[in-house]
Image (cartoon, rainbow, N blue to C red; front, top):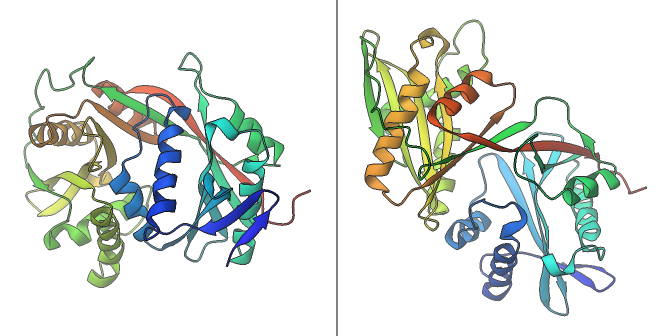
Length: 340
């Protein structure tokens, strides 16, 4: 089923439609300078994203056609059991902006959200930091003109580490505190650590008694995430720290990268259980994992990461490694009813 607006025609985007998917990839490549310095889109990763959604999330991917050519793209994410639909991509060809295509795409996103019973539509814009690199103010002005309201809670701080300018491993990796040992694994978590990894993620900000692990429940998200990662052609590298006396996984960190873009990598989750904090294990894990990544991926030169702006401890760890703040990720929300 298709939907039409004046001069535009919307069709679902499928990985099996080689022509349309190819035009979508070209659109993203031509818009890659929207956020200077960001990694260019990896075709294997992006086509894989059309087939493998994030865990517990459905994706609606659409493109806007004009005279048979892709001029805009929309991705709406629908987390299971949530009242929110999230706009993960709203993209207009750089040469065709300010002609109503963006508003038409936004209208489509609202329609999709309402059709799935979602009461809130959410999105994100990139904004400059004081003293940081300039960022295009047009996206924020666009969402404000549509009635977007900055979401409650902290924004995200986007940081980059340029290994050509700073080597955080110049002094080596700090020695492990007594009583701890390191373990490593790749893209797929070994069965022995699948439940502990899930429990560590749950422990972020948790208080009180630890939840009782349930093998099937606790591993379902981790395994679904790995299915997505493998389906998108991504590789991952993990380093964990084990408390020897108890045999428990006290913390872990991950770095992942796409099949393309050999110079770029993403510093992902780092978590140390609150019972084991105060030993600088977070910094040690990140440095040890980076050392491992560079042995296996020697072309890596740039790492990016993001944290909530109020996560001062992890931002401090990143700064100690040489990560430099680049911009702020601001979340917006919109009602899903008809536009005013």
